[in-house]
Amino acid sequence: MSRIPFVDLRRAFEPIQSEIREAIDRVLEKQDFVLGEEVEQFERRFAAYCGAQHCVTVATGTAALQLALLGSGIRPGDEVITQPNTYFATVAAIMNVGARPVFADVAPPEYSIDLEAVEAAITPRTRAIVCVHLFGQPCDVDALAAIATKYHLLLIEDASQAHGAVVREKRIGSRSDTVATFSFYPSKNLGALGEGGCVLTADAAIAERIRMLRNHGSSNKFVHEMVGQNERLDTLKAAVLLVKLRHLDGWLTERRQIAARYDALLPELERPLVKIDMKHAFHLYPILVSNRDELRRVLLERGVETSIHYPVPCHLQRAAAGLCYVAGDFPNAENLARRELSLPVYPGLTDDEIQRVAANVEEFAARG
Image 1 (cartoon, rainbow, N blue to C red):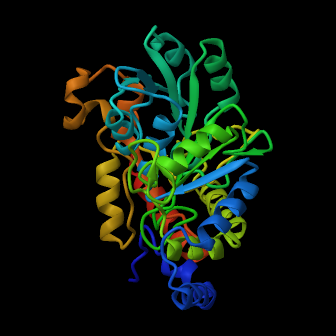
Image 2: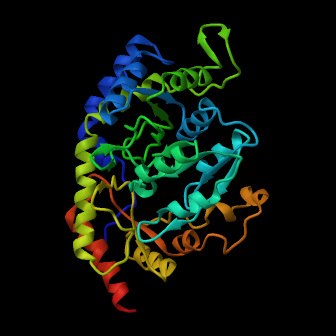
Image 3: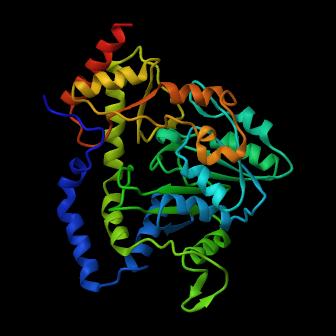
């Protein structure tokens, strides 16, 4: 029985490998590996794709969020509201700038950050909200932006899993009143050959600060206006991202078709609700089952790989112990952590494989 991997990057790579190799060869011919012209080209094209004014590339998705916070003026002692069901990098970025993460629970059926919980968590020390478009499913950024405006807060969108997601006909990253961050980790919808990330903003001053922060605080060689970091995106990675960006919409269409196929084959299965006025990017296809670990074991025995996102919510991680949260503080996020299982969803997954995954899930569910 053939194995169905949870992720298989080769399936998207093989049809475009000649384009990628040509792009790499062009950089090798120029020997321009740091902040080369492909970096600037990709920044322009990704900004245009998302409908943003400015794009600043950085070395990782975590750096994107961290520098977005710093570039927007978040300082030690500030409070930043976010959700506990996210990859810990979201929380680490807040902590790494000296700010304090304050968690707000998520709300079913979408399992995005709870708007009422966000408002209840605001204190005089709150300076920002970081919402996470988890799994590729957009949060209600319109409603969150209204809260941010009401309380004079910054809204940052962690879109690391949401390349190409749409809220009410506007792509994530296009808003003029938010800052959006993306990861180009290899398995993302738009993945680099290694780590990478970017920040999108309509604010030219924020963009310029982030450009300096990623480059040792310098806008001119050997002249340093602030203490920055070395968080530059390699030219080789930008060249590959330029190629992949041309194929992103096709890949998104395929991901959405796969998700629709699962929906049709598994109609009774619980999954986070996708609102009708939003377009999911389906970086992941999560299902919610009470006996998740047993289902995962059975699927693996039958050659179907799955993953969990994420088994330990951030407020219960050892690294967050100093925040003094305890089990039970965020019941919806904790329930999601116990029940979520991600099924394979990626370009190149065949209909036979989709049917095999669904058939095994359905058989297990029928047992009760």
